[in-house]
Image (tube, rainbow, N blue to C red):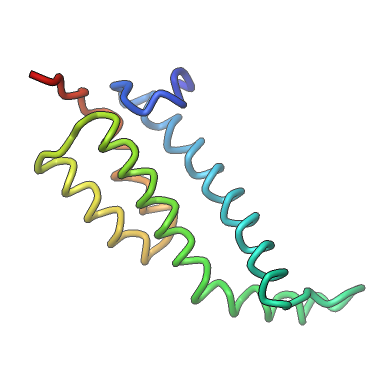
Length: 128
């Protein structure tokens, strides 16, 4: 299920694509958290110290509506384009996966990575 995760040109079975989806979801979540922490420090916003959980939640909810969707869009689009390039899938299916990834990233990472996982099930195009 978790074989060849780093090989973006590998043609996966449905079970392997599910594993790729789960690992991509975890990786996207971790990378998004790291980017948001860097963003907070870069903009000078600091989470409240101590037990002010309400203040922290307010800052995070503000980012959830603007910054998080943008980060998810960038990560999922970059991943689908990397897979598309590795598989040389410059056909209708590849382009549809890119468009669906961009559109579904507005909903969230849970949905935006579905076309990415599907693209991994397609065969790699050979160069003639």
